[in-house]
Length: 404
Image (cartoon, rainbow, N blue to C red; front, side, top):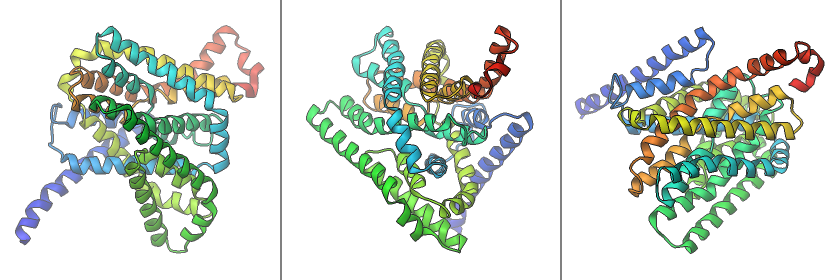
C-alpha cells in the first residue's frame, strides 16, 4: 500500500516541482526585462504541451484545478479593491458602454464566420469568442502594471462585470443552440441564471457589513480558511447556477469591507500569485500547437479588427466617464485580451462537431490577444505622449490633468 502511494506521489511531486520551477524562472526573466510575465507564461504552456517543443506530459486534471483556482483568486483580489458603491456607479453609468462593447466586438467574429462560409451556429459562437475579454488576464495585467487605483479601472471593471453577466445568458443559450434544444428550454435556463446573478449582486451590495464582521478574527489561519472557503463555495454555487464562478468570487471580494478586506488581501496574495501563474501556463497547455499555423492568417486578421474595436470601446467608455486620453488608452488596451470564455465557447462547437476549423482559429486568435494585451497596455501611455508631442510639443503641458 505504501509503495503504491509512493509510486503515485513521486510523479505528482516531480510534475508540480517542474511547473513551479519553470514559472519561477519566467517570473525572474520578466522582472529583469520589465515586462508582465503573462506572455511568457502563455508561451511556456504552448511549448510544454503535448504538441509543443518540449512536451512534459503534465496531468491535465492537476493543472486545470490550479488554473480554475487562479481565476477565482484573481477576481476575488480585484473585488477587494472596490466598494459596492463603485460597482453600482460603474454599472449605472456603463450600460451604454456595455451594449456598445457587445455589438462592436461580436460583429467581427460574426462577419469572419460568414466570410469563411461557416454555418450560422459556428458564426454565432465565433462572435462570442471575439466579444468577451478575459477577466483573469485583465485582472493580472492591472495588478502587474500597478493600475488598480487608476481612474479608468472602475470603467474597465464595469465592462468586465457586464461581459461576465452577459455570459451568464449567452453560455446556456450557446449550449442549447449547438445541442438543438428548444427555445423554451433556453429561455428558462437564461432566466434562472440572470435571477441568480442579480441576487448575488444585491447580496454583495447589501450584506457585506454583517459578513465582514463574522469573518474578522485575530488569527491569520482563521481568516485565511474562512475567506478561501467562502470564495470556493460561492464560486461553486455560481457555476451550478450557470453563472461564471469568477463573477461569484469577484462579488465575495466586493462584499468584504475593512478591516477584514485588508487582512484577506495580505493573506491571499501568495496563493493568488501562484495559482494565477498556473492559470496562464495551463491556458497555453490547452492549445494544440500543430493546429495553429494553417489558421494563422485568419487569426491575425481577426485580431487586428477586433483588437481595434475593443480598444475603441474601452476608449469611448473611459472618455464618456470623463477620463483623459492617457487613461482612455490604458482602458482600451487592457481589454484586448480574450481568454477562458472564448476557449469555452469554441469547445462547445468542437463537442457538437459544428465546424472543425473553429477550435484552431479560436486558439490562434486567443493566443494573439492574450500575448499582445500586456504589450499594448504597457505601450499605451508612451504612444499617446508621442502622438501629442508630434502634433504639438507643448500639448502635454497645456492639457495637464486632462491627459490622465
